[in-house]
Image (cartoon, rainbow, N blue to C red):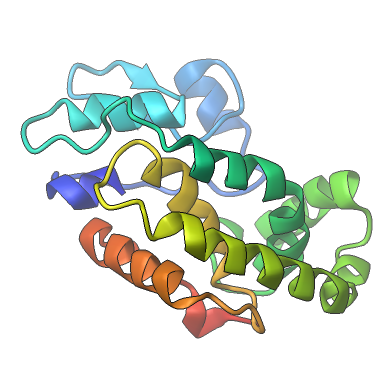
Amino acid sequence: MIAGFKNLPMQYAVIMEGDAETPIQLVGKKVVPILQREDGQHMTESLEIVKYLDGLGEPKYAQEVINTELKTWVDNHLKLVMKLIVPRFVRVDFTEISTSIARQAFIERETQVFGSLDALFEQSDIYIPLMNKQLAALDQLIVKHKEIDLTDFILFPWLRSLSVVEGLQFAPQTLRYMNRIATAAKVPLLFDQAI
């Protein structure tokens, strides 16, 4: 997101799901994302990477300001979000799980947390109405959020992930926000893969 906002020239490499060797070689532990800076040093914490890249010239987007209402909304609904997105991620086209080995590694990892992903997918009829209710409440909060700040690096990734869930109803202000951030950050939404 931050590279898109700032039009930073970046080279991207995908670490496949199940590949522990590459991140361990780079930073000593299995973690993503990893940023290799121009000085050769590596960074691994997402918001620290955002702040570092934001420091590379103007304008600034990742000010320390965080909209506590929006962050609380994310914190309070993250479990529900995960129940909707995880069983779908294995069914759609993501590069990091594009091989059978990587896809199986993803399934095994997430099954340890959620149990059967097929069963979780089948429970969507329960979770989608609950999420729609929370998305309606979010619309009332998001209308007050005008400027890009650190909040967007917390909120937008989860809303983008939810765009893969067919049947969710993104209220007008939320949908406008999602499209605005996706365009500015050059990070496409997932509506075309929604299931």
